[in-house]
Length: 351
Image 1: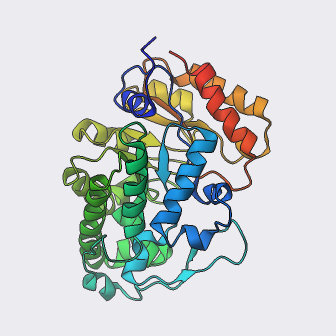
Image 2: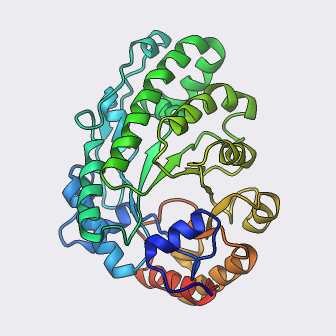
């Protein structure tokens, strides 16, 4: 067994396919974290970097996970381009995407590269990262959930229209993606400069029930690879929450770019499952193993323990496992199940 590590050392060891003392556990708290700060709500959380940091810190202190994960809503970049947000009508509901600024294919050609320090709400991540880094230094890894260019395109234009434009107006769409790539690149680098340790890189359209592999190679991958090349200090973890994630593409990126480290996906509800992914892509760090849609919400602490024990059995050998849910944790998740997940990671994930 390795010497006892802090969370940063543990996470980095797993990310780099080395052997940590325990398999690290990362939970995407999101708006679940508002429950840990008296008087906090979705609007306050999503409109202030200070409030976001308060929620991250309170969640981390109460639950004890190995990462702090800055996760806002889908408007964090899109609002800077003019997407109108829908305010929540009930507690525990994200601000949603409302009116989109891209009305016609010609609008793609008029997009600018945004400044994350002043445009939209991107500044929230920068402020939150700085506050959290100042508290924990280099002992706890800080992640930011950040949309890829093609994912961002579907946040400023209805996704069905983006899919049509791939066929009818590819040149216009690609011109828009150049600007979006510049914005995402700048955002990633600013996040790292302000304390982010890793990027939860939302390649959510790289799933075969949404795009074909050829479509994604033409419209998504070139922008993604440009981001990877121009953000050398960032550790990227592509996150794909669909049911047929393009593992082969992410593994190609891992082999080409030193800063593409892992894949995050829903191993209990997608293809491949955790066991098969470990066997087929042994050099790719796997960030999954916890079912956020069933076990964490409706199961007992014993069920959570059992699931994590199984995930560790299937994927921790040889390193390269970060225990995590397949997407954001539901606000309905019992706190005891969250704590049980951390406890189970220490119990069953010990090397």
